[in-house]
Amino acid sequence: MIKKLLGRVFSGRMFKSARPRIIAVGEHGITRDRIGSCALRTCDALQEAGYSAFVVGGAVRDLILGRDPKDFDVATNATPEEVRGIFRRSRVIGRRFRIVHVMCGRDLVEVTTFRGPADEGGAGAQVEDEHGRLLRDNVWGDQAQDAARRDFTINALFYDPAKQEVWDYHGGVADLKRKRLRMIGDPAQRYREDPVRMLRAVRFAAACGLEIDAPTRKPVKELAKLLANVPAARLFDEMLKLLLSGHAAECVKRLRREGLHHGLLPLLDVILEQPLGERFVMLALQNTDARIRDGKPVSPAFLFAALMWHEVLAAWKKIEARGVPPIPALYEAMDEMLDKQTEQLAIPRRFTSDMKELWALQPRFGQRAGQRPFRLLEHPRFRAAYDFLLLRCESGEVDAELGEWWTGFQDSDADGRAAMLVADTGPAKKRRKRRRRKAGGPAAPAAD
Ligand code: ATP
Ligand code: MG
Image 1 (cartoon, helix red, strand yellow):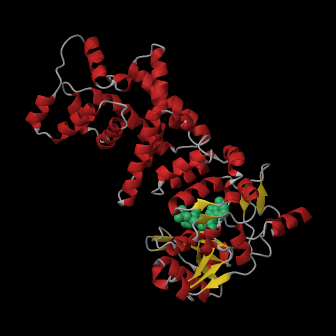
Image 2 (image 1 turned 30 degrees about the vertical axis):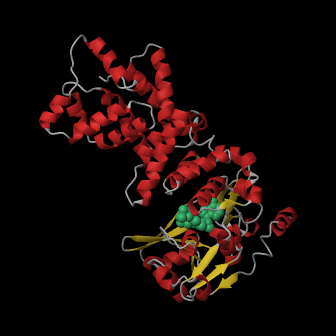
Image 3 (image 1 turned 90 degrees about the vertical axis):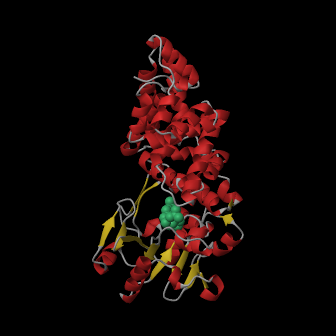
């Protein structure tokens, strides 16, 4: 108990955090109309019912950076049950971390009750594992305590829409101005409580263009191994946020720099060491980032298929070398890699089936004779598989000519397509060999 108390005093959680700096609209410039209507209505209703209510976290950070927030979270001193009592269209969700979803039309706002320090909750409200990782975290507290439990100073900003004030407990506004990412409290202890914060550090630094403060950065190399204790499904969620942040290429570069890439995707470290693999992964990520910036949809399955492709290729070659025919060998390689992957970062089944389809369609691009190219063109996943092929061409893995042929084939009319077909004569075995050579080696053997 005393040790815990001293720990909190030294980590600055008790005294320094007690009083916020309250910043008026004249200084920060964020007017009430910048807040989403559902979050506004939620805050207003909570305040009318006598509770305090603030927009919190990423939305305030993004508004101060002059960006449009993607969603709005609300923090309040009302308990989940009290929040539930105010909003007819709401429900309590989560076990590890109970929150309320408030719905307004098709909009949704997450309402979180202020969290307090561990030792003040009842039995079972907060539970940790042997590494100090929090398994459950439902101890209520006041706003200052809640601010101290957030991860980074830039994420501990509260905005009161009624008064148009920003409440800053840990110097987050100043950190944003000087482009610093700083952990609240003792960084090593905070990473132990929740190792995912290491990934969050990288994501926020990359997405907001911040430098990670030296004391916040220092423990990461040593504690990176704790990611192995995080449930595979949570790791997937966090990795997905990172990959869909619009700054995925920068994030992966930084993950590597911080030594965090080892436990995430099997052999991602090995892939990134091979020039061809690295080029392919980086191209796929840059492509995704550009699509997100243009407001185009992106497919997580495509992204994960790209991240794992060179591992699948390596496994495929090995299995073929044992004498297994190309297509069964490819299927075996896909299963082997996905099994291995699931142990560390669980890709949901709805994505893995799409990934397999994308991979399995690749050899079919090597077949440019007879009816086969026409059948491939009709395949419902043709477009995604073709985009994947173009990335392979661009990265230098297969001959650019193959991608150009397929681009031309799509653009041609019936006569043009017929004229483009590659002659399909001679015994089947020979044909297969020739096609494989044309398609750029073992990456594109004939199917069926
Ligand atoms: P994003 O733009 O990705 O939504 P965000 O900062 O809003 O960024 P969320 O994951 O939505 O991130 O979390 C909302 C807020 O909850 C954060 O700003 C932070 O204050 C707090 N938070 C989230 N995850 C953690 C964590 N693992 N440890 C401590 N605080 C956290
Ligand atoms: Mg958020």
